[in-house]
Length: 349
Image (cartoon, rainbow, N blue to C red):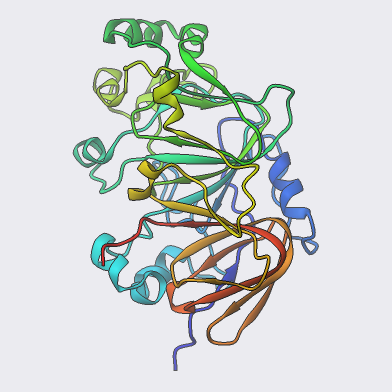
């Protein structure tokens, strides 16, 4: 008899990266966690890939989440996609979870980079998915926490090619909109949009399940232009870049400020993001029913309980990360707790 699928509490999963960070992840995971469950706090563990069925670009297994029974989550989902994802999701997306969630702690400013859309990824990487993403700010350390998104003015292709050839980082950064953020802010980053996260900003990142980053500012981060353009050459890679200008009105369509929202269930992201992923913040003033879905849960504050429709009860506390299969059914959440629920796009009825 096959055991029923249940929610699974996940340990940290921090593949080594090219930029510094990780102390905020370690502190977050250690808040109320049992001994041995803290994240890496070394210089180059700035990303925790939660419930990941995605690998680092060019790697076979690095980045994948391993379940307590020793299997990769990717293999478990492929063995029982209906149980993990639900029939409608499988009909729409096959055996892919269609989602990657990360904890990302920027110990330094990230380089200016962008990601391909689905069409570009299909043509050049043989992938069904590009890499649209969104950030939920959960913590900041610096006096002026900043993220960067979109060029302030429309730029011609030659100007950008010259900046890349000369590795003119100041010009690249100064050309972007600088956005001051605080916990509760969310920023949607469509594919193609140039962007960076500033030092001291700690986010939960939702994205399509790929690792396609095209990096304009590669010299002080990646060490080679090849890693910046992922083998495509910059003439090809730059075809995926959004060179258009984003004024304040246009930029406002990417941002939500949710720190003052007190509802028990709050949608966190702008409507345009919903065809790629969903995120809501759950604060159960009374026991809160949660519909069946494949989901990643990030416990951002407090302590509480998660009950499945099959009768299991799981304690939750600050810093926990969970993967929930569709087959766990309707859930009930209660306690003095705040949970970020991250999900793939809704499949059509």
